[in-house]
Amino acid sequence: MPKLDHVSHEINLAEGSSSSIAGDVVTVSNDGKSLSREFRHPKVSVRQGDSSLVVFCDLPRRADKAIAGTWAAHLRNMVKGLEEGFEYKLRAVYSHFPMTLKVEGNRMTINNLFGEKVPRVAKLPWSPSEVEVKVENKTEVTVKGSDREKVGQTAANIERACRIRNRDRRVFQDGIYITSKGA
Image (cartoon, rainbow, N blue to C red; front, side, top):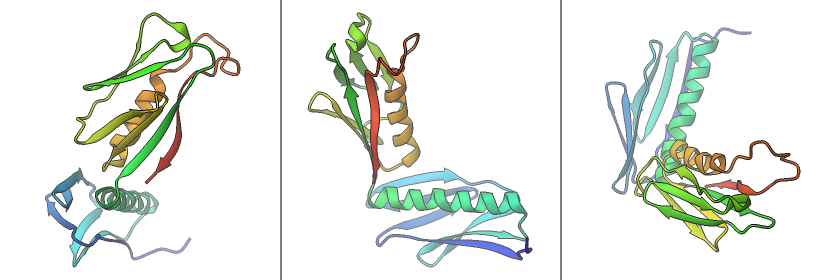
């Protein structure tokens, strides 16, 4: 494998976006919204270019190249999230007992899964301004936001709340499942 003298990934900012670097924290802003993330490593750094951000590593080893690529992906997701946003769609599936879904503050309540008397609760750890959760047509759930990790974790929390235990999953397929991870 050839040795590289440096690795550099350039992330172009969208029109009207700006970025700032304060120590190890990189902040990307667009239309009044902003996302911040800490990037700390002894050999890999994030630099400000003209209308872009540059992830740079001098004399990289394999692990340093991997971290530089991961950081570039995180920064691309921050820019894309502020520009377009991320949207996950989930669908409630039931065969006999109809489920009812309600979003109340920072929790989602799933009633009547398999005819259970005790409702299941999914935690929605972020505020509605960061991650918005909507229930449409009684079975469609939409999770939207600008931070990809928060949107994905919220959708996973909802899906995990309906996990089936002590039953054959090939037969008992009721639950809430992620159907699309669109942008």
